[in-house]
Amino acid sequence: MRTPLLYKVYRTLRRGWKRLTPEARYAVRSFVASQKTAHGYMNAGGHEDAYYGQFGRLLEAVFTPIKVLRLSRRPLVVQESMGRDTVYGYFFAFIEQEMKFRRKRSEFRDNSFFTLLASSFASLTTNAVCCILAMQHQMGKQPNAAYVKWLQQRQDETGGFYANEDAPVPDVLSTAVALFTLRLIGAEVKDATQFIQAHWLGIGGFEPTLYDDYSDVEYVFYGLLALGDTVDRKQLTLKY
Image 1 (cartoon, helix red, strand yellow):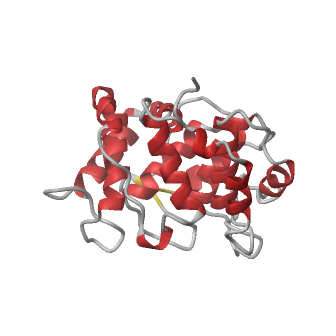
Image 2 (cartoon, rainbow, N blue to C red):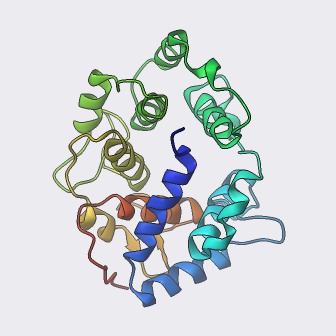
């Protein structure tokens, strides 16, 4: 049985975390703690949000590995805009099913499943393509070559990835999921260390794009995920 995708994500986050200097780790932990509420974590708007709480719990497990045991005990929350009949909804359901070893995964082995996914969005997006490629890999299927090529073409000279063909600038979220997916399937990818460094904020987070000047637990998650999948494994000294 393949290692569940969520655990692979966790291991990548840990690699990214270990790349930070002690000072940067302190900043990250302090920032994440500042986003915590009585029952979860805040979203970018400053409101408690169950979806963002998932990122916070994963980061807690990254900071304190003993908490990794909690990852399989809570169901994943899908944003309303990511309904269960979308690519993202199926992706979250797939991750949940992988974590429940007693369930059979036969429902995801039908080729019609990928036909449904491919037809569920009119124009390709980096996130959706990554979801499909990651699921194909986890099920032992050959990754869709056209999707792999399309994804590789979304990376620019800075190492960052664009969310789609029309995006004006690359962003940290797209970069993180693209790096993770291409490494997962063994495809070629350029290093993005300098791109991630450029999006570091002294408060202990990563800004979504260079046009932004804020962070939240979601973008701390994506920043560490991206760092965990960069080529250069040297410890970083992130400037404040």
